[in-house]
Amino acid sequence: MTSINHPNNLCLVTLHFPSSTSCHCPDHVPPRELDQKFDENKKCEITSNNNPTNILNNLCTGLETFLGFNSASKGYTGQGIVYSDLDRLCDGVMAFLHGVLESVKDDTNVKTYYSVDKMTETLNTIKDSMHKTGGLSAAVTAVSTALGEWDREVTEKTNALKNGLNELKNNNFSSMQNALDNLNALSHSDQLSSVADKLHTCIDQATFLSGAYDAAEKEYDKLDPTLRDKMKDALNKIKLQVEHFHGAAANTELKGLLEEGEKQLNVIENAIRNEVEGRVGQYKLLLKHEFDEKIKSKIHDINEALKTHIANLFGWIEKAGPLVWRSLQLVEVIVKEVNNSTERSQFPMKIRKAAQGLYEDAVTLRRAMKTAYDNISNKVNIAISQLGTLENGVKSDLASLRDAIKNTVGSYAKETLAKKIGDGLTPIANEIYQKMNGTGCLNKIVSGINDYATKFKQDKSFGGIVQKWIEDIMDEDVSVKGFLDGYFKQPSTYKAPYNKWVSKGEHNAEITAKLAGLIKNELSTEIQQSASIAVSDSQSGAGKTEIEQHVAAVTAACMLFASQLEGRLKAMN
Image (cartoon, rainbow, N blue to C red):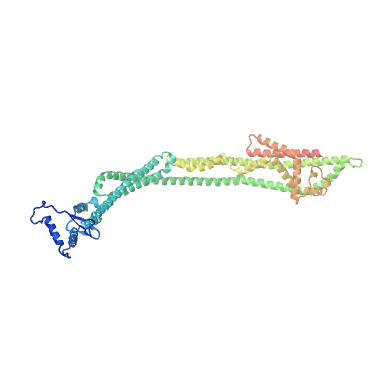
């Protein structure tokens, strides 16, 4: 055995020589002879031509070239004269892949998802990788990339179709069903106004349904013909039903009928509103005319008469003021004479007779005031009577207007439109009903009388009225002003309870208010009894109107107070 150490080898190369018995060819030299010749050659001079190392190196280099060995990469390039069975297998596999892809390149099932240009590029990559080291890896990578892209396109396009059909089934069908259910639920007459809106919703949902199917059909068209053929019948059935349903839902005649019905409803509603507003306007004018003629003129006459009586009364008071003031001074002197009935007093009997005459004159004056009050009360009663007449007339006219409106409205749609018309008339009818069943058309007058009469039924309120009367007398009565001025100048003459009052007011109004309050407190018993009689009289006014009861209560309170005040004055005398 001989071993050769070559610099391009990583291990020793062992040469096995056959034994002498293994070959009987005459051309072969037996090993013994070769050994002998080799020993003989050792005795020869070794040169570059017969150096065995050089010979073996040249032999190895030739073999490397023959086998396609690359000294730089330490591997075989496959470009040698011969290559291994593994290289043949790799090239065979790549040739097989190239042939398969070449045969399906123009197939519609393939080029639908992977274009011919991309397939040509992949085939060129496989072809270029053949007969090369590592070529199979590059070819397999190219084929794997192509298959992955083809599979991804198939998955995306089939999923897009499935998603479109699921959207149609789960969302559009459900929305359409809900819209139809809402339309069918409109069974009551008060819901008829919503029919048009619900129908519009159904039509819109049908349009959305058709659009959703069109979107799914676009995804279907992106599939390969073979797959489309398998799904064609099922998809055509869906398309037929969707188109049929959309055509039925988008019924323009029904839509137009509903729109025309809604339009006519608005026309009728406007006609009724205009008719009612016109008649109400006419009634307002009539009511204003009747009020001006039958009430306003009467109230004006009463007001003028009251002004005349008040002017006459104030004129009489102004003229009588100085006389009364002078009389009071004389009366004070006379009273002193009467109270001090001593031997020095002169004519006591004459004084008493004169005082009795003055008292009778005062009674006569009170009767005259009562006569004036009765005259005013009569005029107030006349006004109340006129108010009652007008109120009855108003109620009668309102009833006539209500019946006329009912007859007019009854001529319009009695069944289908009855509820809508009723809704339009309800606010007007309620307003008229409230006017008819309320406290009358002149609520402000009634409420004003009620509020004023209520003050006479309460001790505190009636006391305030009495105090206001006293303040007005002290502010406007000339004789009272003169008497008070003289009285304030003599504080030593103050008597209980007025001796508790000290004039420290900053102005006359404060002085007047304080003094009036003291006088009112002295009349608390009379005030309380007068308020009680007002309450009692207002509760026993059977058969009278509310206004008459209030006026009667105020009259009773004033009469009782005046009577009690007269009695107290008599007791003082």
